[in-house]
Each structure stands twice: as structure tokens, then as C-alpha cells.
Length: 292
Image (cartoon, rainbow, N blue to C red; front, side, top):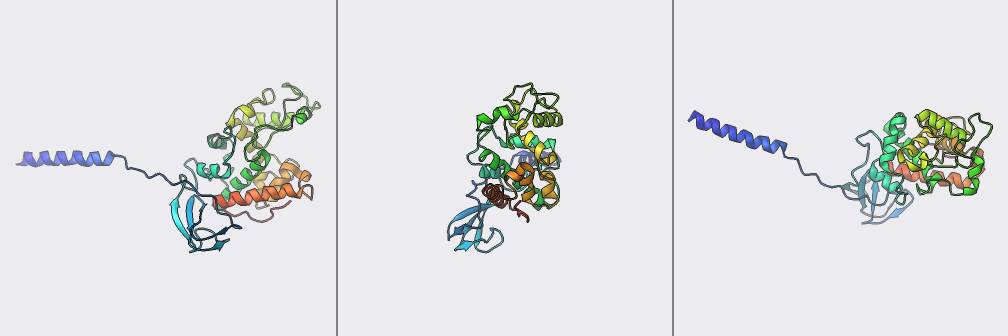
């Protein structure tokens, strides 16, 4: 009798163990609808996505944020969900794809996330609101510089020979016309390639073409400028956001008086519009001081 009971217990244990190790089926998240836009009008039945979730309007609405008003019915997570990714980045791949639906295949999400290790403070400083705001600010400026991550290198080839500063002691070993704009921030000039390469441990002075051949290298140069260079401004774009100096100061650090102080209001507005859109996708705020 005891032997029979023991046999039954052993058999039962085997069944339980098998159940424990069986993987649970996981549901696939739906595709994300078009991102919610505060200025858009939505009528009953229309859909929008916000912060990695799909919503359906119950009735007419405008400027009522999904998740904060009864007008929106929550339809669940979309595109793999929103919020932070396993590696800690506050932009999901689905949100990245939503921001850049027509991007060049060169600009991969994996290339961006691989580059993050070079500057761990990027989009990882302050509150969740500020982290997402910085990511939106960086990607908005990147979108403006590259036409929505379409252009890998500068379009106007007539400018190419202009970016060699012969006053630098190291000269232009890759050639007079080799230091044109490339990558997400359109890195240009021999001295910037030298400085970025030294910081990243890559010989970009002798081989600037790496920036248009390797997605991770391209993203690293963009993050190098964003996190360490003030350009014609007075602070790095990273500090402009985390110190609450405003998106306008990121524009100043990238293009200075070419756009700021009335230089080109239309270009400034274009950057702000993209920043506002990306902030909405990430579910954050833009903060103040948007203009420069």
C-alpha cells in the first residue's frame, strides 16, 4: 500500500514539474495607431496611440489626453508596449518606428540602443518625465537634420570641400572633401571628426566614412555632440534639457544664430513641432522655453 502511494506521489510530482517548465503563451501586442495629437479633432470611434497604448474616442474630443479623460477607451498595449525597454532606454522600438515611419534602413533602432553605452547619462538623468523629454528633444533635432532619418550624408555635394580646416595641425588626411555632414546630427568639419573619434576611440579623422557605413558609429557621433558639445551655444543640448533651460537652447547649440535670434524662425518652428509630436508619443511634456 505504502509503495503504491509513493508511486502515485512520484507520478504527480512529475506532472507538476512538467507544468512548471511549460512556457506560457504570450499574446502579441496590436500595432500602434497614429500618435495622438493635441490639436487634432477626434470623433467617436476614431483611434489614436499614446505612450505605447491604443485608445478609441467615445465621442468628439480635442486636446484631451488619452488616459486622463473618460472620452478615451483604453484598448491595451500596442507595438510591444510603451515605457522603458529592457536595456533602460525610454523609447521603445515601436515608438521609434512611429516617429520615423519612412526612415532609411541604415538608421536602425538597434544601432541607436548599442550607442547608448557611450553616454549613459543620456535620457537617463532626472525624473521619467525629463528622461523622456531629453529623448524626444534629441530625436526631434535628429529628425530635422536628416529629413526624418532619410539622409545619411549631406545632400549638397558642392559644400563637401568647405569642411577642411587646414589650420589644424593634423590637416585633412582623408582628403579635402571628406568631412561633409554625416549621420543623425550631420557631423561635419575635420576638427569635429577628430574630436569625436578621439572621444569614441575610433579613428574618424583618417576614416570619416565609417559614420555613413556603420549605424552604431553614426549614432555615437550624434550622442557625442549632444552630450559633450555646446557648439555656437553656451551649454550642451543634454544640459539644456536636464537643467531645465529649455528646448530652444538645444537648437542654439546646434545651429546658433543661423536659426536663433530671428535667423530662421520657420526652421525653429519645424524643430519645435517635431519635438511636441515626439513628446506626445513618449507621454511626456515639452517644458518651457521652446524658442531661441
